[in-house]
Length: 169
Image: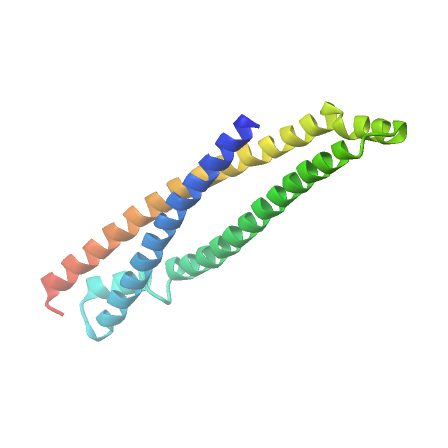
């Protein structure tokens, strides 16, 4: 249970970091798209190349949109999974607590013994732990990917700004 609580805390911390990086990515994407839109009147070859390679008609913009949509779905699904797991754990604890109070008759004692068997609980906790470990690993990978992507977009923004400054557009 302590390991699961620690993993849940780690998932929450990673989700916070992930959300921050996602917000940075979203702002950078909008800034890049806006700057590329401003270059539409520029006739410089270098700016035209930058527009084609990174602009709304290029593959990068399409990929950015697809990633954004996918990440929104992942965030929603991850939240639903976490909520369902918490609801299941709470229901199990409540059911066990409620059954303990009714354990006066022999039939209730036998039923309670089945419910209190530690093997199913341990198996369920092990499964939950495995899921949480997978979520932690996945979230760490996505967080690293967003940090890399954000650095790349910043580099492209600087390159675009430098190019625009040199050509005077």
